Amino acid sequence: MLREYWRAWRQKSAAIPDRLKEALGWVGIGHGRTAMYEKLLREYSQGLQSDQHFFAYYEATEILDIFNSWKSRATDFPGIQGKISRVFKKGTVLSEDESASANSNQPRNDAFVYVLAGKLLHVAEAHVVSVDGINNAKIMHGQTQQGSPSDIFLLFRDNPIRIECKRPMNEATLQENADTAYHQLNDNLAGQPWGVIAIDASRIVRKPGEYLQVPSLEAGTKFLSNELEKLLVPIAKKLNHEKVLGVIGFSRIPLIGTVKSRILKLDGTPFVLENLSSAAIAYLCIKNAKSPQGDLMHELQRSFSRTTHDVPQDSIPIT
Image (cartoon, rainbow, N blue to C red; front, top):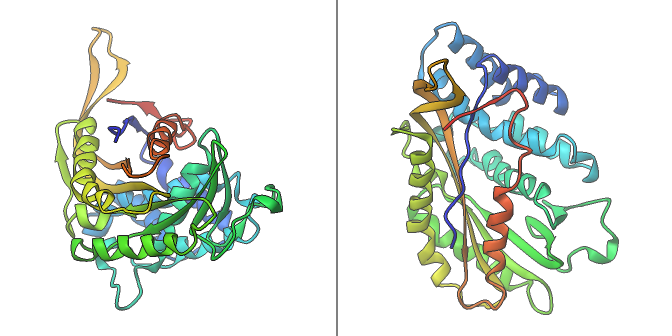
């Protein structure tokens, strides 16, 4: 297992709702939760205060992740933009208001697939073959998967890999979700590719209405990596099928922290920003020790660290 790399940047507050408006135009909708985030962020900059206003940026980062990843690649997957449109439109404004029994968590469950697939679209030596049952039109038909469609199917360093994504609503359902993903993989790995379980643990790591208070953004990322390790290493240790490479852990939480700009003042010291409202995001790849190709998980994590598609051009690096 490798520790998560980290990087951080800051944008002008006005750029974020403008970016959301651009994302809405991309999918051709003008209402729903993404439109609400745009409205809330503009109101927040004018001084309006509520839980929805405070957490709007954190919630919007999921939308912006998908938009930044897919805006130039969606045409390769005919029909995927329509599915992404539903994610942008449907669902509760705040994630803590989701209900599995009412199925209001489905849009964010689907969003996790598009977030991870979008990340993989920009990984060197990775070729995403299909996402959510939709094939990449630029991939030869002979490279498509056999059996039931997985959430994500890719070739990484010429190794075919099926990924099943889960987003448990609480820790009590974590193992159940992992077991479901394992069985989905197990049913389709005979004579076929390798498998990976991907788990978004955001709802477990973060309690409703909470945010992480940290002295630095690096501390926020380390906190998330540690939490993912505690939750998912036991899951990886239970994997018995050697063709299951391991587990990809993911989490996103809101945070308040102190940051330093890499741009220096005239006296040579960095600009310091206190109580910056932001979001921490972490990926952690954990290999299955029983898999002969388990080290591919480490290579995948290293590849994650080299992607730059998600860094806005008008942003300022911070630490």
